[in-house]
Image 1 (cartoon, one colour):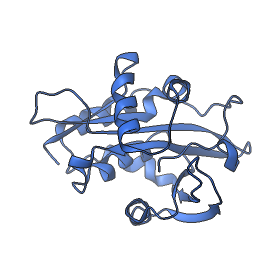
Image 2 (cartoon, rainbow, N blue to C red):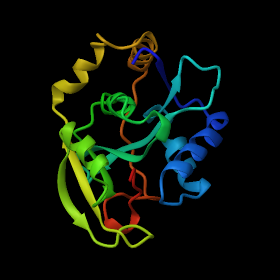
Image 3 (spheres, one colour):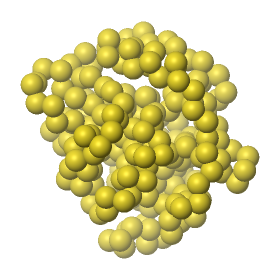
Image 4 (cartoon, rainbow, N blue to C red):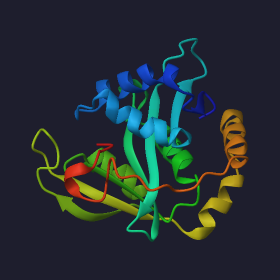
Length: 203
């Protein structure tokens, strides 16, 4: 994957690109306030992927995440949106970009939802160790059900983030720069992923 570069979300200048990619590739509609909720609170948990062989600075992949305390006891990471341009799929971009997010900030578990019949997404997440926690009926606006998937993250996982062997130079530098800044889980009440009706999905 040396032809792909990754970096963190930098601010409002990235927002139009994130919105365009998510809205063009995912069927669930999101308003700008949903994007800003995640990107304002957890900018360090959002990453963009670019082709290094093209002068085009439009991202080909994006992941948007959050992190907070779940039931006052579990440091939970939540993948809200994951989208890869259809012309760049099946090249491992989604694997790499998920790895970026999963190595951040020592979470105890990672949670996401995806459509019950999205077999490609289910196969990807389950290959990374996610398990199906529950089925959420009529979860999406289009009436489809979803599976909630959970990945338990071993305490030693965050220690492995210092090993960037096999990573592209941009990945190594990104992991190094992230390790210099410490973040903590925060409690927020404006939005919740604890129950079905409030969750946002990566599809």
